[in-house]
Image 1: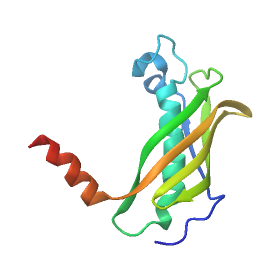
Image 2: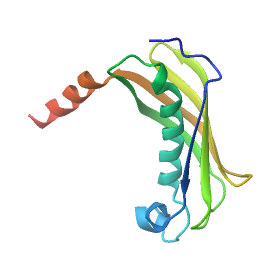
Image 3: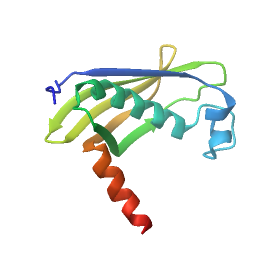
Image 4: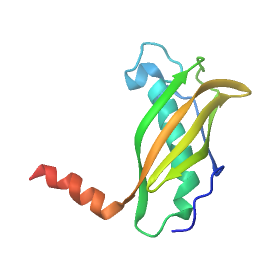
Length: 130
């Protein structure tokens, strides 16, 4: 695995459509960008920032999120999530995450991911079916 450097940044964007609104995902009744959708976009930004530096067969899984959803975003706007790697402790990765609609900060917080070996992780999860 290549060294993961503090300050490594990631970004992901999505257009707000009905399918990612609070009304559609069940987190509220209004047709505005849903908090679960914002969280997923923040996780995607963090995931994509580190994936190129991992060994073949490795990935990351989300462990913890502490975020605030600060402003509503209507259908038709684009939301951009940004992540920055703040700390690495062994397999644990700690990020600062933010989301924007245009220039407006609509969400921010902290996110933790863990580096895993994908096959082992899936095998352990699937063993629960037995």
